[in-house]
Length: 85
Image (cartoon, rainbow, N blue to C red; front, side, top):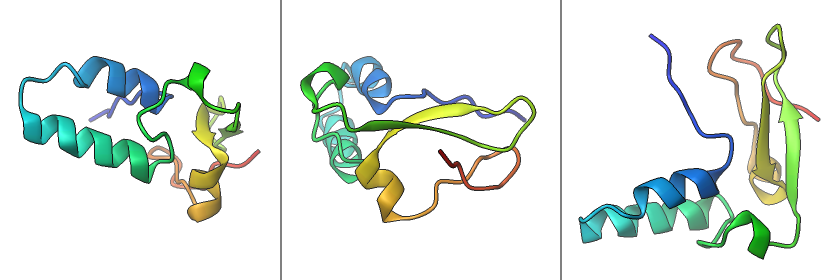
């Protein structure tokens, strides 16, 4: 089984904030706050995104706010190792 993810939370937020359920929108807002976006788009932030890569072959890049990376390790779902700069 393969799990597909968006490389930026703003993409996820743009797609799923159109959900009709108020509870779903609230859950996504809280997720954005936890991940450090506070509901802002990438353009509205201060450029704090950091690109990191896992150790898969080829390495998979992700873009994450520095605050998320500082909070603890972010692990790759394929190689199960930490993403690093």
